[in-house]
Length: 591
View 1 (spheres, rainbow, N blue to C red):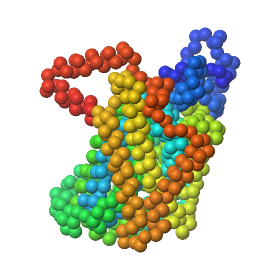
View 2 (view 1 turned 120 degrees about the vertical axis):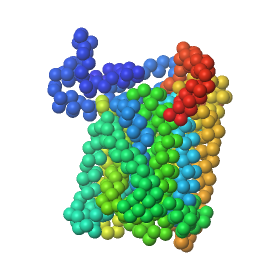
View 3 (view 1 turned 60 degrees about the horizontal axis):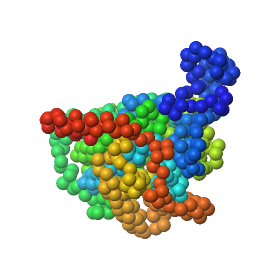
View 4 (view 1 turned 180 degrees about the vertical axis):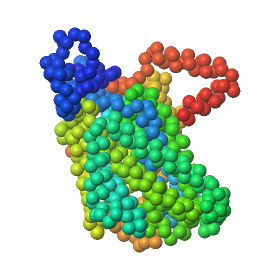
């Protein structure tokens, strides 16, 4: 297809399909006419060609305004449906952090410490997602929050955050491949044939399947992620029901557990340090919750879908983390010697809850779900890393070829780079893989906190800029009901957690202070500083001032007619009787 064919931004027509019913072919290029007659295989090959150039009129725009307009017009393919976005928003990032990592947390901090740690992290994320939703709906750009940081805060910090996010997920991919192979060791005691082969063989299989899904495009990726999310959601809900029944004495042994383990051996372990230690895994367990903003760039009607996904964060945190863990911890004491003794499902509190309740067969089922959860996170890792890589390249922070996007909206080079890094997962074949596994976790561990803090800072700076420039919130398709204060609270929690984790890293539980123990928690800090300082010294770009922030170019803003229609809707709502108005307001605020 000729490079001068333009894409209308509102529809972003996929020329790779060539199935538009044209009645007059006089205006079509010879390449397009030829492609329509080449058959399915020919059209499939054509999808890997560069995406059609977006024809943008930059007449009268400054260089910065033209740059923002190009970033908001990336030729991504809107293949994700509202149903897929809902499933990804609710169950997308549930992974080994919840199913496996919570076991180490239980042993370190006790059930009370885990719930407090996850609750505080949940509050942070609830406000952060509200802030992210507002900024991402106004500026629907490829790369989302990392590109927002370049625009609203500081170009160098945005560069550092972009690479921080890339490294978080590009390392997470081989990490999850390795974890999946290790999880299969759960059945080793059964002399299962699947566990008698070299684990590298399983890494090969998982790597191939996830790579195939990623190269299939956003639609195939979304379908796979939706299926895996539904399985995880059903499992967590089922475990909550199972836990309530067994806690009340309805299990096969009819033993009444009640809340006995909450006061014997107790709700807390290792004092305040035990609770603070939970923050390390709670951040890892909930990482990826912000990925819905990246996915929205490839969804239909993101300005409608994203606010709903953001509001569902509350229910997701409440049910899948706080409620489920509270119930499961009624069946597993923090003194259980099996906690934290292995990297497979044997150490999972979800599996141990089934074992303690005397239910045979169910532990293996839960371990299968843990395996699928690890693969789900690996699948998400390729998506997040490749999309961010392409965005960084198109923003000038990486070689231009890395930003290559084909006619199906796939960032092919970004995907290729990520799956090549996945080959690191073959370290599982080495008997000494554990140190490498730990250091990969160290890179991914704190990265989420830096990302979440930057997202809050983006929103704070945008609100300040809007006030400085006299712009009304009515022009936005979505505004967080918590305003700038929600972002301030979330940012304060991020800074508090980072400060407390310095203490835990310097003086780990049951260990002497050491540089190795410190960097196992804080390896991401020197990496972020290196990217930031290096970029700042090389380019010497000034900080972004609120009075000069471009709040219009490439932004999705309501027209005057839409703002008037919104005002009319509010008038109609206020005229309803209270018994109808209040439930509607609650529903729209939380759902």
